[in-house]
Structures are given as C-alpha cells and as structure tokens.
Image (cartoon, rainbow, N blue to C red; front, side, top):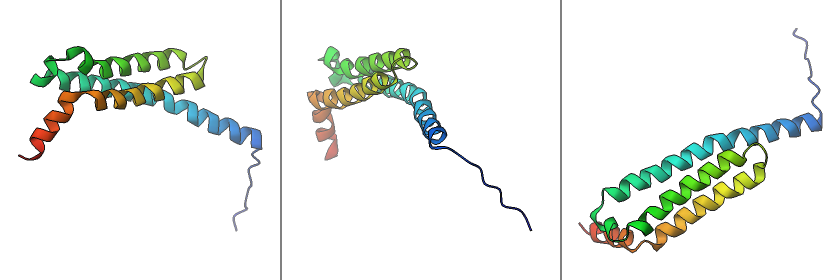
Length: 113
C-alpha cells in the first residue's frame, strides 16, 4: 500500500501563491490590449467613413496604447494602479466606440444587405 503523504501549506503561503498568480496575468493582458488597439487602428484606416473624423476614430486605439504602456511601466511598483489603468483604458475604448457615428451607420447600412 502506498503511504499517503500530506503537504502542510500555511494560509500565508497559499495567499502568496494566489497573489503571484494574479500578478502573472497582467503581463499577458497588456500586450493583448495593445493588439486590440492596433487592430482597431488598421480597421479605421481601411474604412472610407473613418477619414471624415479621423481624430475621433483613432482615439480608441491611442487610448488603449497609452493604457497598455502605462500599465506595463507601473506593473512592478504599483500593481493595483496598473490594473485600474488597464481597466479604465478598456472601458474608455468601449465608450469611444459607442460615440463614433460612422461605425453605427456602417453597421446599420450593412445589416440589411
């Protein structure tokens, strides 16, 4: 019969491991966020309706790029601030997308085709 060994794990060690797991996820998220911003940038440059209001249409991509950069720089010293910065960047991306009139018109016009 195999003997059953138990590993003693303290509550502090368990909490430290969970914190390390959480901290290891942020470096995965900021390049993904940056990629979403670049994808939007490429999408905007390929659509004719986006040239009318180029500044407004590029604002979401620039906001995500800035949020990703700031999160990557603050990650080591200010982890919670970096997380909030990335979250705020993603939320502003969604809000700015909702404010772009050409995007809504484009999807509405192509919806019935």
